[in-house]
Length: 417
Image (cartoon, rainbow, N blue to C red; front, side, top):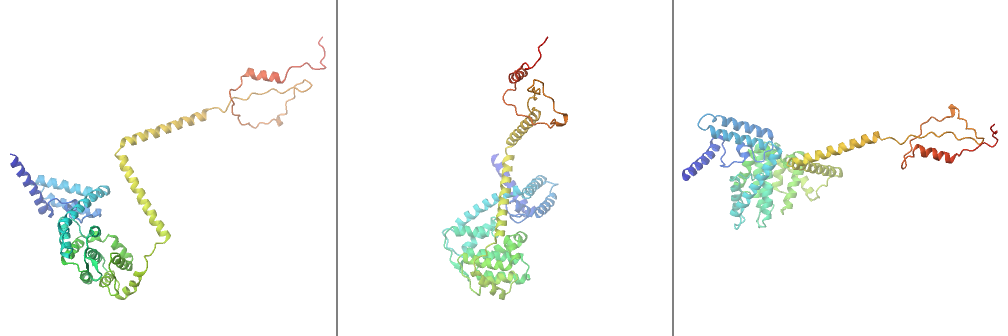
């Protein structure tokens, strides 16, 4: 019974891979979301992703009625999940990071299999990168990271080509030439293809590596056209030639006045040989330092991106802990209520006890002093005095007044009869 169930599971799993291949044209048994939709790896164009999702759903709905209804519904749900993840920036970032980690694991495993203990020859590098591409790793898209990984292995790759670069470094330069030739339309297609072939011959890149890069760049030209390399080249073609020459020197190569690689790159960006002769002396100059305003703008951009990242992470942290939001809201409400009560009490509190009207003091003759005329009476309100201690009662006030002004008999008062 158990054997029959396992056989059924194997058949269903095999049939699932066949359905991927027959219905969606996907050759990988366990495709990624990008392969499932038929878009280039790490594609960021949401319109292209939506369009690919609609196309895949139309192909699957034709099998929705019939004996493959259950499989068609499962694949429709999987395509919908792929579109939902790849069109959500946060979910896409998490998924891409997981995908990059998986690709790195594949790269390292295949490197140990094909390159460790093997002579550092073009055939070794070609076998490794072709195997990686067959496992779904976008070799052309990850070429800079691949070259850095190879250089970190501290293996001596012999120099190749006219510049004396190691083959991984020359492969990086060739990949950039292919991207420029495919994404820039400065010359006719035949002229650009001829320039790329000159770069391949000058750097001694094998046919297998050239095919590995050219096929991927051609199938995902819209993705490669958004790379910073292409954008900066469109804005500053001569700067692209200088960056290529400085990279060759940084990687340990040498530059000659008759460099075929730089001449081919110059033709790809729309420059002539005489323009190249005017550009080459600038390689000796130090890199141009950005002006102060530009550096401030770049630093401000980095700060803004960092603030947005902190706010995003803070929002995620608070969303995962809703009870903290409720507690914070209660604390703020309680603080506002206390402030409101204090404000009301402060408004209703009296300024102090009422001032007592002192009677006019008697004159020296014993007669009461005359009241000043109404015009001389100061009717301006006096500021309230702050109470000091306990206010005196009425009785204490009159006793103090009697002690200050004792009752005396007038000196020349007539005797009473």
